Image (cartoon, rainbow, N blue to C red; front, side, top):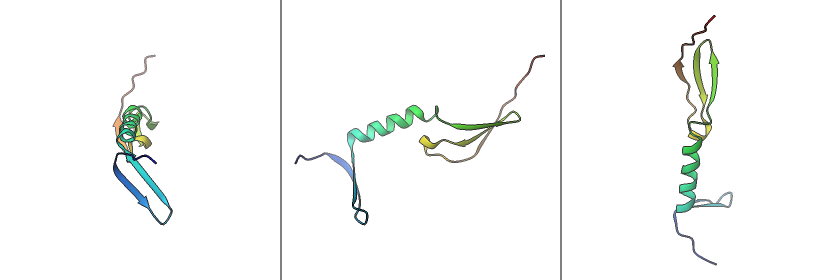
Length: 74
C-alpha cells in the first residue's frame, strides 16, 4: 500500500467512515464552488423585486432582497 499526503483526516469511527482530504481534492472542490457560486442561484421574481432564496453550492441559505425596477415601453 502506498502513502497519501494529506492535510486533514476526518474520521467517524461510529459509522466506519474515514475521509481523506488531499491537497489535490481541496483545489478541485474550491474550483467547482468558484465556478458555480454565481451561476447556480435559485431566484424568485415577485413584483419587480428579486429574492435570493438559496445558493446551494455557495453554502449560503439566507434571504436577500435586491430591488429591481423594470421599465415597459408601450
